[in-house]
Image: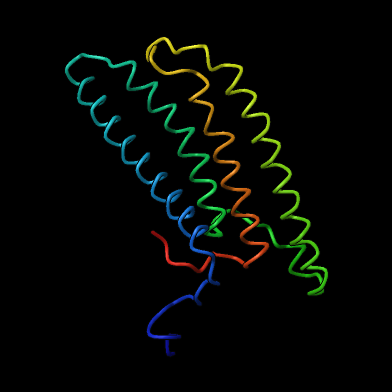
Length: 173
């Protein structure tokens, strides 16, 4: 069997505005960079443990970075079409109803993202004056900022999908 268009295995993604594509790439790179920092910090902590030392700040920093990589990675995964989708029911619907269910799904997703963004922002503001025991220079509110930011990026990608179609077949960073 011949591969379509010069060896591409997947069809091309629809063209998104440069700004949205830039946000998408920034979220992808940020999630990857945070993951790389976590790998380095965990490695350092394992080496320190082998010498009988403990770096509590490293452990706590990795826990905080995990929250960030979860929310940014969730946004990137949504844009890439990598989230789990159960299509047992929707695949059996007529095409017009499938479209309606997809729109409803996008609207529910937007509502959830906006809910998390609003309440996450309130959480950030409410805890900004507190600090962590092992990282006293870091406001607790900053650690929670992943909730509203990740949710806003996801909402942006939901709107992108609604306006321009799925970006699931775009080249990944």
